[in-house]
Image 1 (cartoon, rainbow, N blue to C red):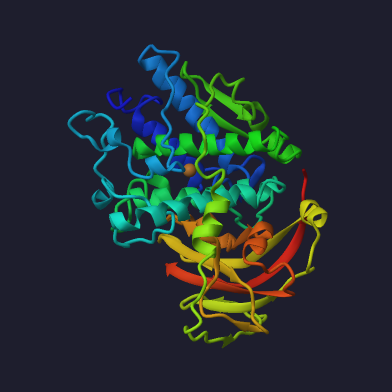
Image 2: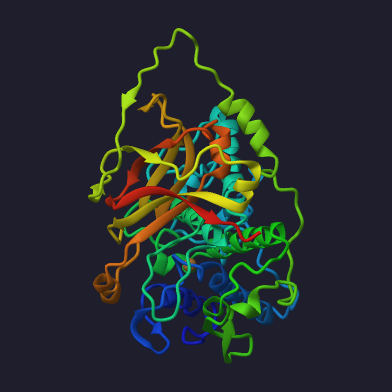
Length: 437
Ligand SMILES: [Cu+2]
C-alpha cells in the first residue's frame, strides 16, 4: 500500500485520509448542509470503523493476492497483551509496518488504562495491580452496559440533528491506547491525533480489537440488534472497495461479521471473572482502627457550570434506593455528567469516582472508579466551532453500587478528577434508564 502511486485510492496515505475525512468535518450530512458528519462521539463509531477496516483488509488482501488475509488484532484487554505488540516496534524485521511517530518510552512498557499524558511507566512490582485494574475497567464497561447499548456504543445521532456528543464506554476506553501510543508532544501525531491516527499501522491492530470487543458485546446480548432504529440502520458511508469502485455501505449491512467473511479467534477473556478477585483484593482492604477517618462536608453541584480545574466532589441524589434484583434488571442506574465543554486540539482526560456518603459527609478517598472521559486532540473545523456542541458522559453504575454497598444510600458522593486539558462541567445527576434485554 505504501509503494503504490500516491494518487491511488489504495495507497496507504489515501486510505489514512479516509479516516481523517470522516472525522474532521470534510463532509456535511447528506441533504443537511451545514450539519456536520462526524463518525466519532456517537452510535456511528463502531459500525463506521468496522466498514473502514473491512475495506482496508480486502484491499490489502487483494494486493498480496491472499483472500484469506486478516488484520491481526491487538488484544490489549488480555493481561499478556497490555504492551505494544512486537511486530509494530521491530523496525529491522518489519520496516514497512514500523512507524516512528510514537511514544518510544512505551515500547517495552505495560499499558495502564488509567494512564495520563506524561505519567511514568508502571514499575514491575506494580504490574499485578495495574493489570487487575485494567481488567476490572474492561469488565465494568460490559457489565454496566449490557441492557443499554447507547452506554457501550455511543449516543444516538439522527439525520439533521446536532445532538450532544456522546461517546460510549468502548469509544472512551479506545481513546486511551491512542493517547498512550502517540507521541507526548503537541500536535501528538500520529495515533495521538484524530486526523493522523490511521497513518500508524498500529491503528488497524487497535481497531480490529475494538471491533472484536463490539462482537463480544453482541454475543453477550444474544445478537439482539443494538438500535432498532432506521436512522442508525440506514446510515450509509462511501468507501473504495477491493476493485477500486466507490461503494455505499449501510450500517445494517455490517452487523453480522460472518456475512462479512471473518470471525475472531475465541479466547477466554481474562476480565470475565475478575469481579470476585477484584472485590477480594481491592475492596476487601479494611482500614485499621488506628487510622483517623476525616469526613468532609459535601454539597450539591448547583445550577451553574463549573470549571474542572481541581477535583469536584458533589452529593448527587438517587432517583430510587434499595432497588430489588428485578428492578435492577428492568432499569439501569446511570450517572450523567452533562454539558461538558472542553478545549479542542488538546488531550482531554478526567476520571469519575463514586463513594457512599457517611451521614451526608464524604469519606477520605474518592471511592470506586466509575469511568473516564478521554478525548484525542481534534482540529476543530469552523462548522463545529459554530455549533458549540457540548458532550455528555453516561456511566452505568448499577453493579458498582453493590460493590460499594451503597444500594440503601439515597445519595452518592461523585468525584470528578481532572487529569489533562481544560474542561467545564454543566451538571451531574443520576437517572434510571430502561433496559432493552
Ligand atoms: Cu476513528
